[in-house]
Image (cartoon, rainbow, N blue to C red; front, side):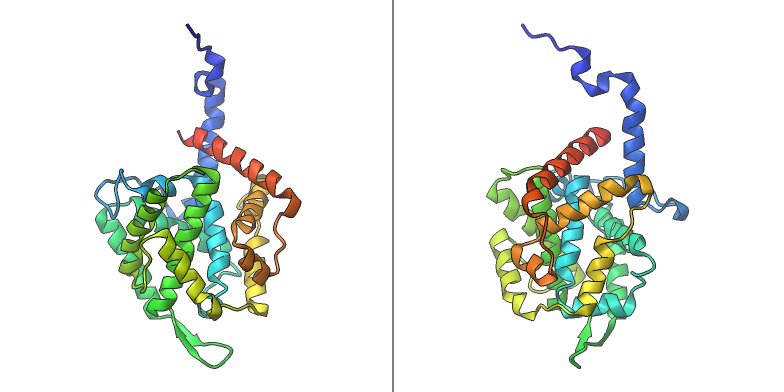
Length: 289
């Protein structure tokens, strides 16, 4: 017979409960602008996906989403037209946290919100995209609602979220579930106007390889990447965690993308970055349990 002592379970220690609440509150404040009255999105089963979906499983992990989200942004900006849309039509220099919050809230609403919440969020984004366009440095024109450009944004975002989940939550995720994730996310990609939209991991990898010749780096890419990676934390006390997240995001990038950005990655320190990020992930799961 085995005996389970109270100290083996952190939730059985009353003095840890305030710490648990504080950690959860701090993280919630990163993604929700309390000055605007924003509150965490409540999970509803009548949205685009649902409790049994792989999307709910993957997008529910804070660490995987933070690391994957930053890594996805670094991938997306390698496309000159994506970069131009941000450069020409965004206040990212003055409000990087606001931009990241808006992206995170869109993902939360479309992943967990009710059907009407998801549809409203998608319609809002499509309306914004319809007004964004311009001329690239090479003289060619671009539009944010270009289906192929939206396909690049979609596939890099989904691939990065899944990569973050696999590395920091479920390393042995079955191939069938990985494919199911892309098949489920295809619904969101199509609703946003992306084309083509991958429905499996192989299709996603194939699309990324197919679009790599369209990518490039210039001074503007380096400036935007620098602003993302060097942006301050929302609070000074969160700076160590913020820096670790950025290092983990660079580490998550494909080797070719790191080379394009001129980023060396953690190198020999990669095991420490991954171990530290895994520790943070476990702590956050405990806080939100």
